[in-house]
Image (cartoon, rainbow, N blue to C red; front, top):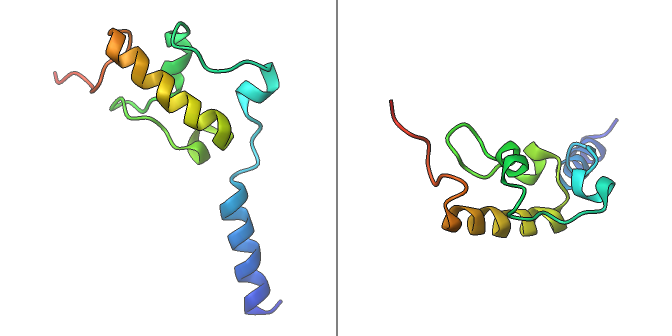
Length: 85
């Protein structure tokens, strides 16, 4: 296999992501701030929003998800940062 073919394949894999199916596309629902327990799955232990590649969400729902998480943080349902112990 030539180097250019290998580079193209790696680039396609990077652009497409891991190949996971989006949870929100499967269930035909949009993210909502009322499901804050479900939204916790898309936060890291340090309470940062996970990337689309890491969480397996499509880009359409990733954009909505980040807005919804920020709304839930403003309402006090989700923390802005992890608590120090």
